[in-house]
Length: 357
Image (cartoon, rainbow, N blue to C red; front, side, top):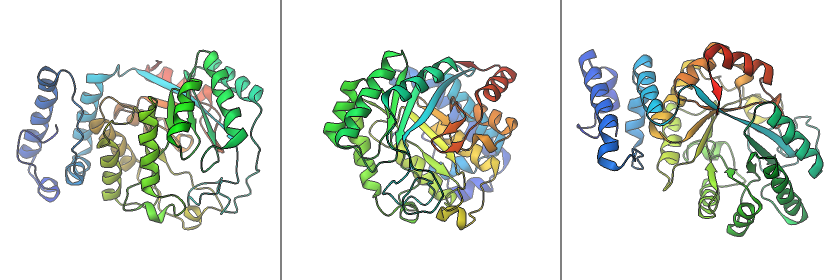
């Protein structure tokens, strides 16, 4: 609803507009947000975003964008509560996909130690530890193109065991068929993660072994099975701002917006093509803008500040939370990458007055 009550201004026009024009845009936006619940039964979610509209949001002065994002955030969430997840790699390395950012791809020489599927008991123990550290959701990731055979049967048993601990469950196993999605739901899975990574236009520069349409089809199967959809992307893949806008448009315009939207900051892993290409690291304020725009576009979704937090200052993370991020991964490791420790997170949350959901 950001510009719907008035003619939609072009990005160029907004970029050089006088302060009075900006004020009118913000006032109209806030009025639309305030009146929407009374006229739409509380449903303020849009599925008709355009890339031009989203680029206009990115072009807003930083403080104005964060004000808008915080206003939307407060309309749907307690701004001082944060959802905490934990992520474990249950099968590491030798993935047949060629994602240019990923340490687990068999196509890259990253010196990653490959590991077979973990035992069910190891996963249950890790989940119990995550719960003790404050996590309410436990995510299991496997370096597969998609689940198959006996390994999938073992993974279903893992999900049942984690669910029995009283945790929400999440899995990221790659491409799913409709039947596999149904089986995951039956085993007690709550969320399924399948990121789109980047825009449809930039995607072919990042992955060639799986199409963008493959990803969208899996998201459809996940939703149709009654699972919560977790899908987001990565900032820092050499994409343009237009690509970032297009990625968010793709997510927001899905028939059902993702319940959880992880926004990752690229962690350059030596041996991966993106690390070797020395892609320029995004400006911190540009990354925060992605968080804020995601919050405005997907007001009812959890926006997760995901990979890359270990390299962020406390101040940068605080601005991400102010911009609408309300979920994090807690734990020393995210699959194969370092992450902020539970102690560091507790200290930061205490300083900011954030409480777990």
